[in-house]
Image (cartoon, rainbow over all chains, first blue to last red):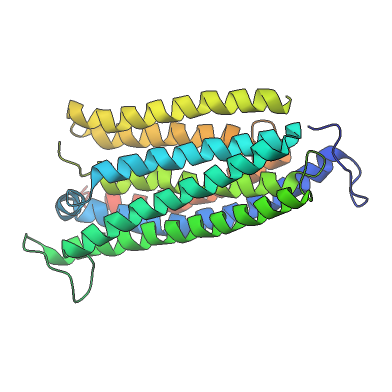
Length: 214
Length: 94
């Protein structure tokens, strides 16, 4: 806890002030957990029923790019955590730099994901009229790709929202509205960013690793 | 804990997270068969716990935040457990 933090008048102490911000973001994250939870549940149930088709489908994804992307996202989590810590130290310029690096790593993740999507499209893996599967059980393979594009797509959407929030924090830090005495908005943004990371931590093994054949 | 220690700690958590990523991809080369999903999910759960406890600051938070953050995962666990207990046991014949 930062002793120099500003205490706003509606709170009785700094700990309560921090707690109310954290309670807010965690209530939101609980609803997000349920949103992604439904998709994870659907994936698990279908994978249990159509294991063979799901494994074959998974082998057509690009494991190398996905592993690289996981490392990119974990690195962005580090730079985000360091940005929050650096802001509390009062190091404005290193905070700005770290926030910029975090956004750029987010953009790099999206770029790599985009390359993957293009590759998937050209392989005829996108569900719908362009779907071209010559192997067995095309129906259930298509089901895998419906879930794959939904889950990674919603994850990418959350990542973009996170990048937008970081850009706002970047501006507020630049203007001096966020500093070592007023830091909770940045901390809350950081927690949201880490939640987006958390979703990918589970998407990666479920979509890419479970069916992988090496 | 001050912000400087927070930074050092974030660095250590990061090293662990990357090591665990290497472990989960590396485990594919061991051809663990039926144990593969278990290993992968355990590694993911450890990574998730590290992120929640350290990066999301739950470890240094008050009991109320522990309760709220655990609450989200508890409801998810109920959802998964009840639905999967149905699907997994459908083929059982007594």
